[in-house]
Length: 202
Image (cartoon, rainbow, N blue to C red):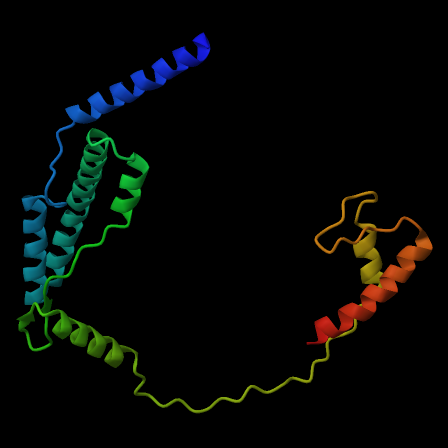
């Protein structure tokens, strides 16, 4: 009993220390990305729209590390909120990993922006329909058989497979035990060879 009480106290103490350590972290609690990172992304979009590939590549490289750090901070903030609320940290980590940003607006091909859900669904449907629709008619290709005939399973192959199985072993899923008598093994080889031929030839 004293041992279990001590271990329980140690567990409660470690949880309290973990909660206090999380509370001391100063992490942003609202958007996942900082204003500086969003500004870099905006500049990268402007450079991409202007067709400046070199500047776009430079800004994209500059965005990678801040985005990674911001997401890391946001993940720590989610863990802090879960610990302070007494919720499961594992579930909070899983929900953060499965988190997906909601699409509130979408740009049409003509440049206009729509916030209607039905309009966005139609734009996405039309886009992927055009993307995956094949406009190139390929000639029909007929697969010719080379006439290769699968050779029958040899009894020597069955003999080698059976001889590699140890005696007095537990049966497999088929509940078949290996026989120790040579005559019984020869019969097994012939039966297995006959049954294996139709399976290989298919």
